[in-house]
Image 1 (spheres, one colour):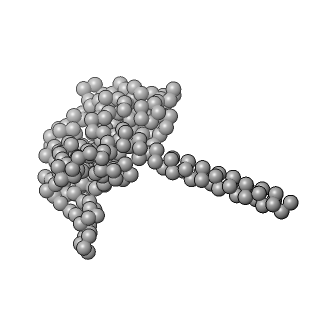
Image 2 (tube, rainbow, N blue to C red; image 1 turned 90 degrees about the vertical axis):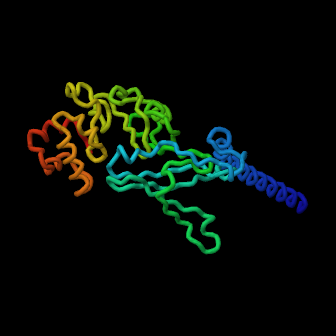
Length: 278
């Protein structure tokens, strides 16, 4: 009898051990699915020599000569080699209003070896350059009437339609006519897919807009002079005044604050309400 109990006990221990081992194998397998998928489709590679890797400009950063407003962008690129399946290298590029170049802030681990600082600050490196051959990705928030809203990574050149599809596609109650599906994506952008009957989100095409006016709501906190001049009632002088006010006082908190800009009175403000956003 004791031998039978011992055999049963051993059998149970083996069974429990196999169950635990099975769960561990399953957990490890699930943890490796992401990296393996990245190796297959996400741009990570085991090939090449890091010393020969490229650092080409990708064109993601707004041109400082055109965009005189302040810009802050966060970038992420796959790290070199097998590490790229598990991690990304991130950095921030920023420029104040009217600056002619960006300053790039990043932490590079191997710089810290030997007691040095891993933080590097440079205004000579391109803000959107590849990281050892890996192009930085766009980070976009897709929300509203989509099946799987969330924050996703996109490649340079992807458009709003790609963002909607990545989020599982639009719901039946969505009104895609209020979005410019062909518009290119920008880093840090939110794509808000509206429901039918809802007002168009900021930056979306305006249905039945003012004849001869802009086809999208203009963000007065980011628009340059040329874009501001597309607004009805805004010429070069008033566009320059808006940018000057924004530079001196910071971003507009509301559309009503335009009333504080020299040259904008109550009538002009009312005319601009349907054309702008903050």
